[in-house]
Length: 551
Image 1 (cartoon, rainbow, N blue to C red):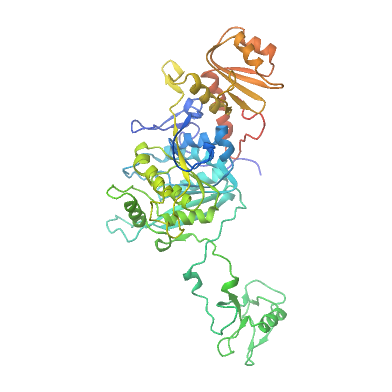
Image 2 (image 1 turned 120 degrees about the vertical axis):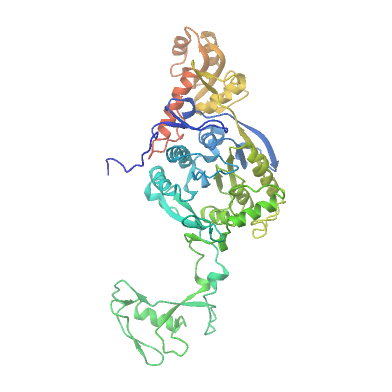
């Protein structure tokens, strides 16, 4: 079906929301050609805890930086993209709720329109990071969950809605509430593909307690099943005589679930229950040994997964004498999310790390993880030390005992760099730090080239397209030198801060198909076009061609 789509609209949706990286200022909307709308920032490995793999990009990763910058790095920078784009099995996010509450560790300042723009940019990136069998779990309260449902429908498609999980977060009613005591949060679950299938949950003593064995059946405990079907069944209209001679027929409008021949077969095998005296209607036995694990349910009680009080007690046990993080989640809550949506070895992402619960539980459950936190103070006070305790086996709480975690593994820390651009009254200029090797690395990431440090005068590769970055002016002589370093059938994109006369003509003459780009002007143009294609709702812009994204 073609034609207009149902779409949630808000002021500023067609623009890009610039969010301040510190406590100063408020978010503002800018045009899509603004540097912030398309920039892929530089990132640096700044530390390691425990045992990490040789390839730093394939380690568990704790990013210090804005969530959108981190998502773009994972999607666009080739060294990360090969590990994460289309390969993340589960994304759990607990974003700012937009409730106007004064959280100590978050500036929760956003109103509806800014919040929707903030979330849409990040969900579009998350969509492209998810594996075909992946799912995204968005944790919310009542303030925005109804708008978020519409936004998720738009980004992922309404056919990919899975469920709304209701978590009983409160231990007791709040009698000071003006109207109602709010006892629950919501988690909206969407899949990347409509055929996504969640993992079942292990059976519990409570779920098994309804199975008994009153007749000492050697097959073990069983449950009497309803013998009747509601839908018409051609072989389900008959009268059956029980052991005591009593005759049974289905109630009006109903049918036996199985044929008479099948009922006789099960009865001969001891799988039909006629009651303790043999005078009751026949029931089909369902044996505990033959039932599957539990289908996930949408209501999660505090007794099963913990409450806000549970999580705060967990934090106090980890950080004795420190003011508790404002909005942690219980580890049992995250354990259930991860059990349903992932398996050992899968990659789990949380781009609003906070105290690090998602990463801590993923680590204990042998998942790979990537997490990000904007606040440096939160990382230093909570996230980093908590995850280090998990690695060193020094975190005794949460799910540690139930999963028999004793420590191991490791992770790297990654710091997202500042912007390569400065928006001045005289136009967009390159930042002072964008020189030499860091300038080349930043350009490679921005244009989607794999960076090559020791390949001068070339510094990047994308299929048969090479990259050369000149920290200064490029003229005919530099063009000849660069083209001379190319292999057979290779072409090159040259990025320079200044382009001298005859450089373009020389390039066209000796290497047709190669190109010259002036920084920052042409970097912004190509970046804006790439992001425009990627953020078109209902499309999936990929890097599967050998040439990669056009620069």
